[in-house]
Image (cartoon, rainbow, N blue to C red; front, side, top):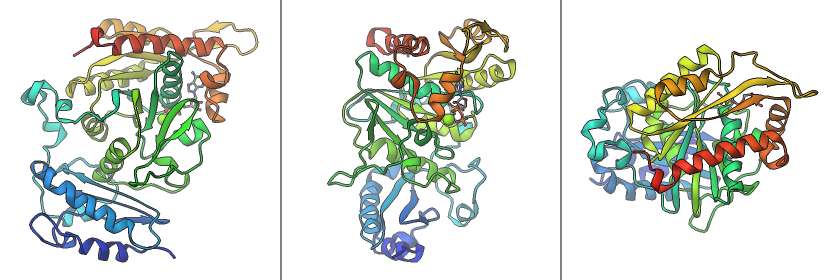
Length: 381
Ligand SMILES: Nc1ncnc2c1ncn2[C@@H]1O[C@H](COP(=O)(O)OP(=O)(O)OP(=O)(O)O)[C@@H](O)[C@H]1O
Ligand SMILES: [Mg+2]
């Protein structure tokens, strides 16, 4: 039996707001998306009232999950931005009364926040010692490939590592890891990340069919991400590597603000254009006071798969140069190589499947530099 939006709304109408108004009349609900038994929505509230609303969110969650035919639900509290949300489907937002919410990220002033960082407002995630973001200014520079192999490199150092694919619009982890199974739920309905290659891995791609077109509004992206962070049974992790969506727009900036990040890593290709984007990435993290742990140059030089000869077809070294100029650590360079592409595209990440290769060694060396920066004595603030 398939669930309808109407049934979900009926269930939500039986839950009341802190001031005893049915949720459906409280002017706080985002559009409700129902797809193949999965229900997604957000509750947009005043940031100052989050505590009272958390109980309501939990009740809404239970009510929706109790509707026959609901396989999973993603419901979260958000404080909606007033403008600048991604283009998709803005009509429901227009009907909703204005919410005080958090200020538009564009107006954000880090200096005004306690301890100087908006991240200090984000509660740490119990059990996770450090969360790092792998980001890039533009798409297709190999960020997801780098994030996963870096995570595996950190695993090889003996660390307990998780990977969160925060690319809600175009999740890569199903393809890169070959994982096509759904996460199991614990007794209290928390998702259990998929254990593969010695990592704990979570992606929205494990919850929705790969070819389902995803139309998310800004607050829903936040809901999904918050739930994937906070309502997943990550267990104890030394590091959680977050593969960020490409770009440095408001959506990414908001993402960066939602996650209690210890630091960020920028992936860039050596071309000038990509470096301009990398600079934007740096600026974005500076704006939210997240330390940039360093830059990785990907597809740095071309290495012939037959003879191993190296050619700097892209004017290699640009990222190192740029990092030096900006005073940001340079973490290493990864060549453009067929085996990296082939392993990544076939769901068998290189560091896991070709651990003896020189490329795996490169990723491990980068991981060692990252791990060094995460040690408390090397804390970057
Ligand atoms: N060092 C490399 N050598 C060869 N191919 C690579 C390398 N790094 C990444 N690739 C390939 O480049 C393509 C893009 O990589 P990936 O998906 O990791 O990039 P991305 O920056 O995460 O992209 P998106 O912006 O779409 O999320 C993939 O086909 C991947 O296999
Ligand atoms: Mg990607």
